[in-house]
Length: 130
View 1 (tube, one colour):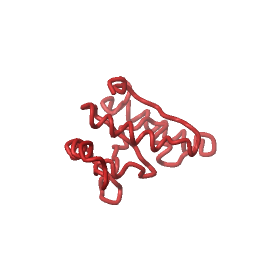
View 2 (view 1 turned 90 degrees about the vertical axis):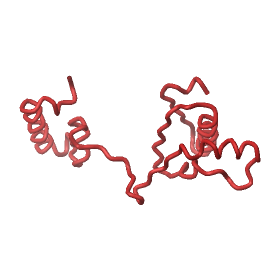
View 3 (view 1 turned 120 degrees about the horizontal axis):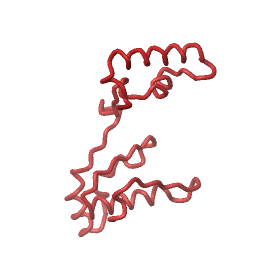
């Protein structure tokens, strides 16, 4: 478990067991470490990570009940979605949020780019680059 104190990437073909394996890894990390873990889960595969499965092994279930309260699941339906302030995004991400394609919407993209450059010149504290 100590080797997971850095970013971790897991990949494989569809149906190869990635979701199941990652679920096991997350459970072990919760049980055996104090690592802070952030899981971006667009398919909602791990929304029950903070609950003990009914019929789970008694000793292990008891240990997991001790760490389960540390798991916080946020969903958009509950108003707990991921939030980020627009100025915290770089200019390419801001353009993407506005659905501006740098090729298809080159004029609008250029106008946005120029406007963001002016804002950065006028208010350097809003710049993402120091």
